[in-house]
Length: 241
Image 1 (cartoon, one colour):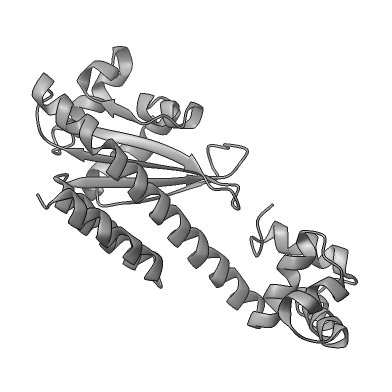
Image 2: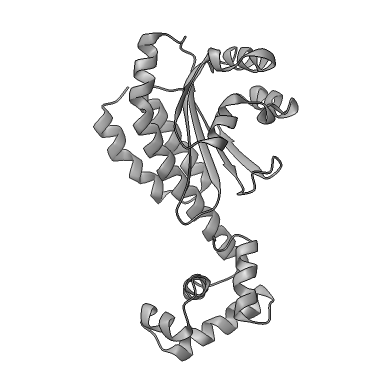
């Protein structure tokens, strides 16, 4: 376990990640430095549809496959808490009563016994993200104190990971659409209601140049006007509402 200050100072490096794998590697280093073994990052669309979520984790593969096969996501009390509240939670055996006790027993057999989970929704992004970190330690009052103390670091880790993944996803969508940096900037300012003249003042170029960029955006997105371009960009994740 590393000193708290050293761990916190290393977290901004997450924003330099160029791929989701790099985010995962840096999250792994951070949770190991704090004292945890496993992490799970879940991203879900604003509607919360069960089939519209993605997961990045270092959980054992057979554990992940069993979880998916048995559709535990619909009954997992930690996931349910994170969907309903942004308040972090210390989780352990007592949270898994009744039928979901089988989920806990299976997880515990893989060294996933106690942990901290938190969720957040960024100001400029519309997806909900949860992070759960875990270890195989048996829950005790002393361990509970340590888990409570680790909460602020996990929340901060979640914030950096959320921004890093959202940026990577957005840049990937931009590349896929073939937009240049200037075209992407014009599109984003249009989405918040700026006119060509206002965008030209913001970007330090002429209004004619802004309109030139918009003609390219409209062509590349296969639409007929600026309003449709914004709608299309929202639908494919180029910009967030």
